[in-house]
Image (cartoon, rainbow, N blue to C red):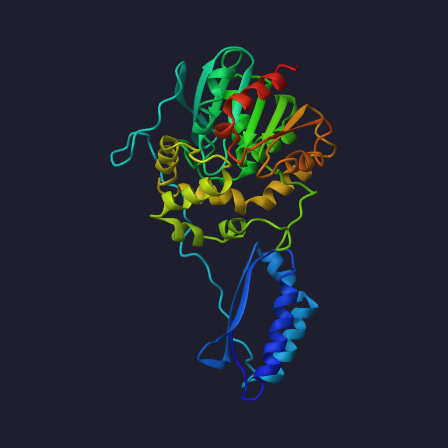
Length: 392
């Protein structure tokens, strides 16, 4: 947006802009809304808007404060017949992950599975899903979050495998799983898990998910409740009709940044290690966690062409997640759910959020623990999961 104020009307224009900005930032669906004066010419006003959807933008255009501003601008600009010059920004291209095969020249080799586990790939829907499997007994499926892969579970898996078959999955487009052609979000991930469970003949499973893996696990349980015996959600806030949306939702800064189309990919490319390091330092309560070797593995995976785009797609698909869970949860999820929070990040909020969507929620908060529960408290978490999954 660009407009030119007539000389002498600068103060009135600033007041009109202040009212517009204050009102707009309270709207649902606004990702970014910035308006300001050219520092060298206070008659030249520049601005840009980023909205979560076309519907949200259309609602904004119809708001009283928007209409009021447009009418007022005509009184204050040099040319009332053409008060504003506007253009629509679009990404030049959609950033999609490239096909990738572990061991491709130029890439570091994948981390080895724990002893007794094997790394496997299976065609599910339109992708080859990567997973690590071992042990025997009733199956437990583990889902990772951002910025991790299956490897986040490496220290938990051997303990669980003493009593269960354990399958740690790389989400679509992350780790060593292909991106496919469908959206790399929670809703699609729930369908992927449904396909993988059927393909491997696992039957009803025990299911645990961390961060976006927790949201994916919850969406899977909502859509396919007969395929889940028990559900554990770690440091995740699954979304549904209870979820507050819009600029006033109190989300961390990076949530809105990751939702902006195309821009985060361009900003982060070539800086993946520094970007991921920030998250590990900011959200781990224990220095040195994840370990340097784990960080190397995560950097290997997230520097794959387009892998960051797959991660950001989870944030951009939040509305689809809300719609999916709203559609499938005509009543509360009726199966045992364990909510695990790290004391220094989500804590008890994990359980508080899940009680909106599930009737039987057991709360666990791990002291002196941050976001990366499976790496910060692997032994304690393994004990909690075994106790919960075995019905103790």
